[in-house]
Image 1 (cartoon, rainbow, N blue to C red):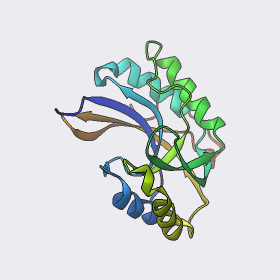
Image 2: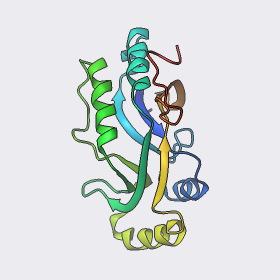
Image 3: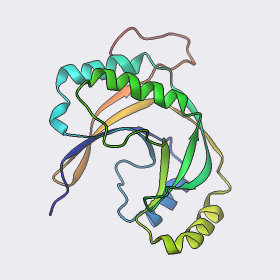
Image 4: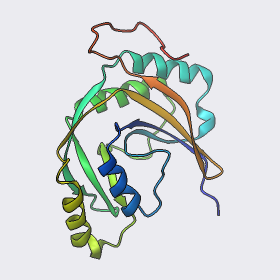
Length: 186
């Protein structure tokens, strides 16, 4: 049975070869095109993203400053076999998610109160967790904690099992001191 068609909004992590290498080895089904990222919202039905919705998201995202965050701690979800890095602080991610939800009034998130994170490994047997954690520390302790700046939100669609990037929304870059007044990519 083919996977269902979905759309997601994610914030890609700047290039970090160590994270990418670990994920490609440890993910049950690595989604190469998505790469390391922080999920903001999803999944959605792709048809929910009409031009007015996309324009509204672009406007909202453009008024939010880029997010400086620290990937600082290895964690595991209690109910899902997923090893991840926590992000700190979470407040900017919550503010961005809530602003985007105001553009999507009919969307009921599948996951309530998500833990903003970067997935490192997924789909493993929980009995192998000690070995997985040992590999994570051996391969990633040299770069974790990792301080990064996230500057865009990307709308990805999975249609017929294939992922494609549909839209990229730039956040306000507070380094230059100018704040945009509307959509910056449409």
